[in-house]
Length: 406
Image 1 (cartoon, rainbow, N blue to C red):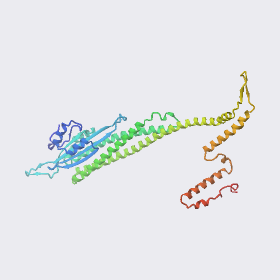
Image 2: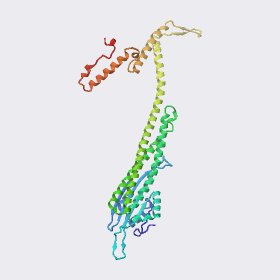
Image 3: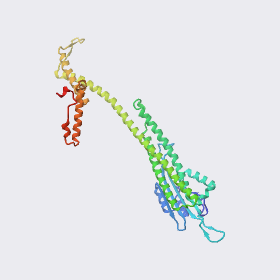
Image 4: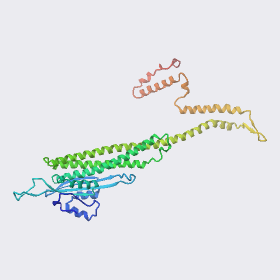
């Protein structure tokens, strides 16, 4: 499957990154894979970019990319971990001219070998389409054409998953907003609210942002390395550099979308928790109304029972034959004492429920007295903040009616 890289300009597809260890040492020996690439492969780094020069004029470039992509068909299950590896080695071609037997490297042509470990399906498609067209030989002029191809295939996978995550976030957002509108009119607004699904969507957005940040750093590192090695007088090299910059902007564009998704799903999660809290508050409010009713009934009847118990008076006595009851002539004592006590208790309760008595509002001087108290408290507040106490002496009663200032 793998041929000699010195005689081939066509990219090769290597076994998967998870292939048996018996295959990897052979591959690493044949293509002189760096030890750093092997370390990153075992360690499982999020991303890496390396570029080494060989003693024979060869160059080796490698990239690692580890990302967790959610699955649209199974949103509640664990996402897939994708581990992509990319190794490219190139060596200047040795060309013999017809006029001399010496060798020349002035044409800057390269023999290139590409090894892709567990590439995404989009990379297979782009490689096959790349080989079919006549400009596939551009890779012999600038090997970074393959780097651009890899970044573009990775971008297609990322962008597709990013749109799927955006659709999931939008669905969750619509559902939460609908439940928020129905909170006071429908008891079912809280039923079926899946907080686990909301947190899964938020986790997907976080993983996507992590992967996009890693891809952006890879694209920036590739641009920096290409800037150092590109041939500025070559159209192919110049176009490759511009395409790398274009890929970088595409990754930034998708990242901006995911930043928006993360903020939206965070807003949905917060709103879902507020819906839960508001629902619990409504339930507690309904329960408190029942307790309040029982308390009011107790305030009315407890004084009657207490007075009856204190005086020990039996106000109703059944007759001997049991068909009628005799009313004690002292029954008026019960009402004469219980009613004032009940009114007194309810007045105390009313005062404790409000900051000031409602009777003040019925009095013509009540509102003025309230305004005077508020103004006085504001003056005291300013004096306490560092006015040296002078403001305390400035308290005036000129806003009160004359009847209150006398």
